[in-house]
Length: 89
Ligand SMILES: [Zn+2]
Image 1 (tube, rainbow, N blue to C red):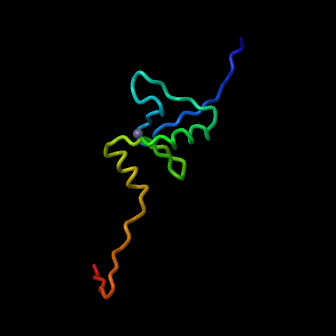
Image 2: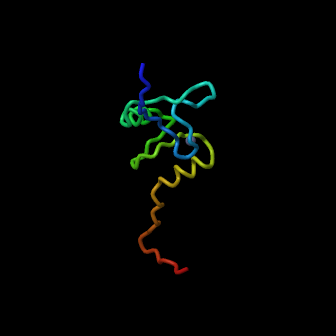
Image 3: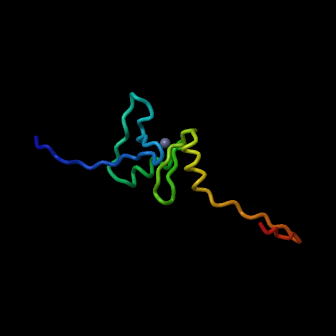
């Protein structure tokens, strides 16, 4: 039996490095045969996020993950009201 090189894909959180499917010490990362298969499965998991630029983020509830999610949000729009005079700072 020959020893062969096999390429597989593993989705890892861009913030903490957790591999998809290895959330506990007793589980192993899920290996995918294609990048598209990895993106499809992780995209369908509500506890993970795949961004439009290809980043993968698990939705662990801590400051680092919240900061990563906040960075994805567009800047807040400036409040503009009719007849309002802008203040110079
Ligand atoms: Zn994470």
